[in-house]
Amino acid sequence: MREAGARPRALPAFATASLVLTPARASSSLAVWVAVLVTATLIVLRSLVFVHYEQADFDADQAIVGLMATHLAEGRAWPLFFYGQLYMMGVQAWMAALVFPLIGPTVFALKLPLVIVNVATGGLLVWLLVRETALRPWQATTAAAWFALLPPVTASRMVQAQGGTIEPLLYTLLLWLARRRAVIFGLLFAFGFLHREFTLFAVIAIVLLEVWTGELFSRRRASHWLVVVLVFLGSRQAVTLLRHIASMFGPDVPPPRLEDGITNVDLVARSVCLSAGPMLGNLWWLIAHNVPTFFGVQSQPPGALILSHQATGAPWAAWPAIVAMACALLVVASRAWRSLPPLRAPADSRVLLPAMLCVAGFLSLVGVATGCNIRNLFTIRYHLLLAFAPVGLTALAFALNDQRSHDPGPSASGARAQAGTRVVLPLMTAAVLVWATAMLGEHVRLLREYRTSPPANAFRALADDLVAHGDKYGWASYWVSYHVDFLSQERVQLSPTSAIRIADYTRQALRAGSTAVVVGSAPCSSGESGRQVAVWWVCRGTSKR
Image (cartoon, rainbow, N blue to C red; front, side, top):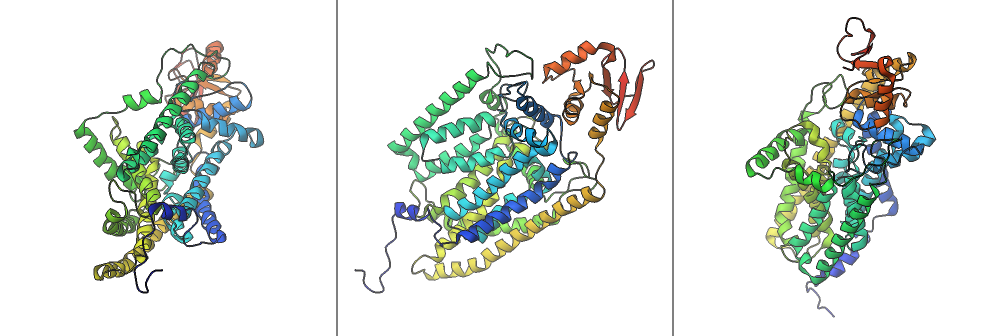
């Protein structure tokens, strides 16, 4: 028996970890479901404009995914990868192919599965924060608000059908769940990496966390990672064999004989510029431009990145965002070294998931900084995992504060620190909610614009005009042709003269000869019949523009 007044002995790490399997606070199932429902509702709201209004954020790359789904649903082709390339598996097209037979090949149907993936990611994130980090449901919801209420520019990227956007975030959470099961982890890693190479950042984050805690250096974990590597390589090789029978350039095109080609590994290797000077310059540029835009605190002019008559972003919201992160860092800095010491298993495993989310988010930004020619706001879609960084930091602050409050017999300095966190944590929570409210206001403002005075849908006008005039085949730029092909549901088949993704459209345009229309931005030449539609000229002549 323990003597009265004696300090209770600390539980061993394995015992603490086992307790985390159920919420340490015994949160009711109802409260957790409410937290998940609130998060899901916010995600649907931030996605609404970009799913319901096709002109808000849609382009030729997304249209190609839609055409891939159409061909798959009709049994005309089997797109293993994005048309015209040997990397980025067509997972988004496979999902859309299940929806198209039910509601038709539309932009809404194409993006609906991506909304579902967003909701699943948000729900799983909240559930994991409650289950493994032992946060209260309201704390998990607060931390997840950084993901659930991303600003319009970033939210549009989360539902872009460009081959792989939101999915690496879901793979990150699934990989965390499967981290103790080598075969499942290896299969999931291979699938996620072949789908979108950004899944690699999650795996690196998990490995780095094991290096920090020293777990990686045990014989058991070394064997685990050896199995992961073997499963990954075997799965990748199996998919490599499948590409020889897949449709690479659309329907009615025999599979090419492939001896070589760019794969995900080649893409990663060729896109890296490992020079310290440019990398640091890139990272600074991303921090100064991409990161503020990513979190909605840098104003963008009307029409930039998304179609809107109004400027996007709320620069004033930078202050609550900075305050929230500063408060979280203050709590983490005062406790993290003791809670997550190097080369030692943490006394409380609740800190591991938030730490992984922070590392994965930061790595995604660093990964983009290692690239060449990345100083462009369009690279935001390459570091969407960054959304997990403030989620992890906020959750880590909540978890460490809870850990401190349960420390037996705090010293005088510890008591002062606890008194300080009684102010810091509420301030952090309030700052997160103010930022989230600002982003919610941005979405409501954008939705009001689209409901009252929506921007013109120029591509829809062009597609409808070509259908009405019976113009079946023709030529246009890459960004016009496939966009119109999908919106017209292939009743119009325009082909680009370069960057060809669907060979049959090009064949049909060549066969049409002088009867094929030419869609361009310049007026028709003398002797050519034509008409102006929106910002384009539709001409009929003997030459391609």
